Length: 437
Ligand code: SF4
Ligand code: SF4
Ligand code: SF4
Image 1 (spheres, rainbow, N blue to C red):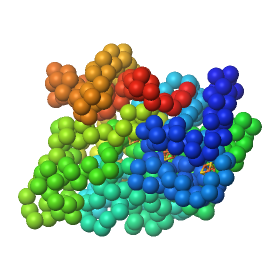
Image 2: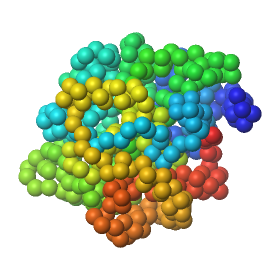
Image 3: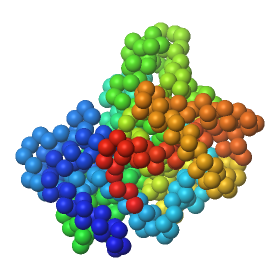
Image 4: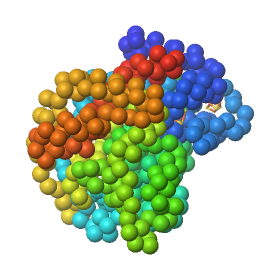
């Protein structure tokens, strides 16, 4: 173990002695908690539960410090995890991958519900139906009705229940809080946002590397993750604060989500269009949506599920998802679905790889734009870089640059350089930053 890594872990081992109060002080009070739920599953005495915005102590803490050590917002060995999984310490802008594709489910039933190509649902249905996994951890919805954006963690054993997981849901979701409950299954597939995948990956790395240096975390991590067999990362730009969609819909005259029959995201504008039960439609603009990021997202170090087996993201083509296959396991499962005719693909121009590599200096040069946007957010609660990026993209044909559409740009340009600036600003304001190394 390198000296720097050991020093960081030593520092956090000391802090963890403060028990749950350390997690409260260094993560929750610093507005860093990403509501992943990891601490809830990690607590050996089950005295943590997720409250509305963060974990709450509901019993007597035995001061083991495991919740603090397991939390991805205290320290996160990104480089070590990358090296362990991909044999390189460099994380490219989209993470390491061996194949990129535009893919779509061949099931009309799935496509009719899916915001994009329905790939995650199709693959998980295949895995469950063929008993290749016993259960799936994914994001369900809290309310019945055609559309619900209030998420809940869900363990699925019946493929029919996967349809519930299909809509995008924008409120924070403590997905990792069900890891302990899912430990009773032998083989589990997992789909979550990049911050969920980061929390899961920290635990999986702890189960691989921390036997000597953090033995209690090592044992807990083994119990929670040794059955995780396949991980899908869902691309994500930001979440919103709880209840923000209620406010945005009300602004458009929609009293409740129950009035929504169906919705879709327009590919170029990024606006959301809602078809209403009583006829007519409402529209929430992309600018309105991205101006409401949750503070937790300003310390996000991944937008694409770097440490998943496969990442599934939106694409600019209706009924297609962008799929990044990161390793042999991901490729094997994807190929099985292709051979059985469950998914279909179309060409992805130049696979995006050359383009992304050539974009690195451009991304770096955009720090100033993001710095401005983040500063505005801190001052007035509004994130303003979008217009700059849209202006820039307006110079290119079809708002695409070498095959990469504007919406992928938006995610890259805003997230990738923003992190360092967010850390700096938070430091100036006296907020603790997680150790990411
Ligand atoms: S018992 Fe351990 S894991 Fe649970 S809240 Fe206390 S310090 Fe955290
Ligand atoms: S980031 Fe996750 S593990 Fe850390 S305090 Fe929040 S919910 Fe718990
Ligand atoms: S932007 Fe990052 S922290 Fe925020 S919800 Fe998405 S993956 Fe999680």
